[in-house]
Image (cartoon, rainbow, N blue to C red):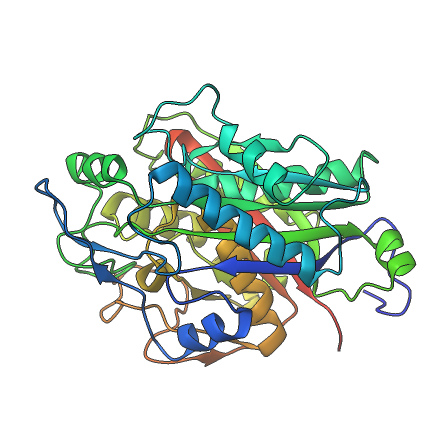
Length: 381
């Protein structure tokens, strides 16, 4: 990319914000991840669960109802994201795309699944009805994909997109009953992996056409080079073991670039044996067969430290990729000590790992076969 004269058709990231179990400042949370910190806490439950660990956001009071917690988490992060890009949320020139995986509505009735999104947009004074995406754990990533298409198709020049999700009693019970919750802690790609640990959070990216960013004098944080999705519909919860649709989503995101150009991959990495196996197969098929190039991207993952935040995870992990590209290093995978013997790519263990390269992929897998990959490029030299 020519930083002085970007292609007017490029989709840039000009702002971003998150709220996580490790805090809400971009560099504060990122520094904690690089240092190997985690946000796991004991969360008592009156019901028997596989684990009482959860990664919760302490700044949102635990005694609020699920819908109040979802709204407070969304509104605070939305306002921060608008501000990070120098945008007025009341302006008519921006659109909003918000994602979640049911949000509070497994625990509380709702007239419509986008009630929370409309309330959040109203709370910050946004004049348009938001688009609401609910594609299971891929919702945050799919919101970014949808936002990029709105910009490329000329519907808007600026779009704020991302995801929000909260830990609730129903979600903890559901994952415990499914056996997808760990009995210990989330150990992605580790020989001892036995499931996920629930988490919560919110993250939003401001996407903008290069032409609009130039007019506003906005600073680009990254370029969204590609976004791809696919659905195998193999089952309600279990993924297709072949990895075909995961591979297709990644290949679609490459937008004509070689897989050998990708320097880092933020893996979905839930720590469930089925998910880890499918993701390992998929990453091998895309990235480990580069002929005589001998190049394999560095893999990292953050759910061990932040929990699995369901519909927010794709947006949270997109921000981690952008920050990793900025700094040239990725955080260690918390909980990973003994990698699966057949894992095909180098993975960050023990401490921050440096890399060279400009492109990073964020891979998200969801129940129902929803798989999405976002490809970002670093700006600057």
